[in-house]
Length: 281
Ligand code: 6PG
Image (cartoon, rainbow, N blue to C red; front, side, top):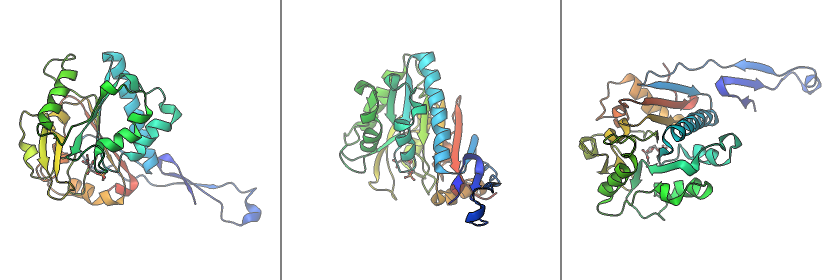
């Protein structure tokens, strides 16, 4: 099988017979790069999931190091779902990422399902098992959402404000937020035409998604996401090509596809997409 390289370069084993193998070099093919889809913000397209993970991890490390230097700490918010799992694993084992300042990092959860922490569907359960238990992040800097509590959204909002306000009072800015996109265009637990899209003034809200299990959620709002310094949207796999095609070619509003309501006001929005998810121009 050809070895996939970043940037669409493939080393193809010579197929002119075993006798020639030692004298004939492999062919080098350069696959045409798909045109980056016309999405708001910067769009980074890579050949494979692994190469997408490389790109996100490098930007995450860069942002972490510069925020830890500038502010003394780094506020990172992570999503659940299956897309970011290879990134979370990589953050723990890749020696090139050893300089990640975990001891200065505050770890927040973008959204949570209203289930106990030991439930398989809990986002924090997976993030704890993949990251918290393997990094030297102090426990006091890990901020799960206590989603089964009645006042979960209010309590999380207060916690965010009290940790962030010393930097710039009234400006609740996370440093790096990692988002995914659902097949219906949702992001975080902001579902199409759902009440949390109108939670004006709130940083965190309760919400409900008719097509997801469990339907009841706690989620960061557009307001908080759009105040962030860097929002990274990771989209991989053929299953996501349909929604990316719709985002590019249909006239969807942020109500129809809430990912389109993510437009950081004084920060950057960066998409990381693999070839399989990339729509045709
Ligand atoms: C969640 C997420 C959600 C997710 C998308 C994509 O808790 O499920 O925060 O917004 O990012 O649904 O999910 P996949 O990565 O599993 O496709």
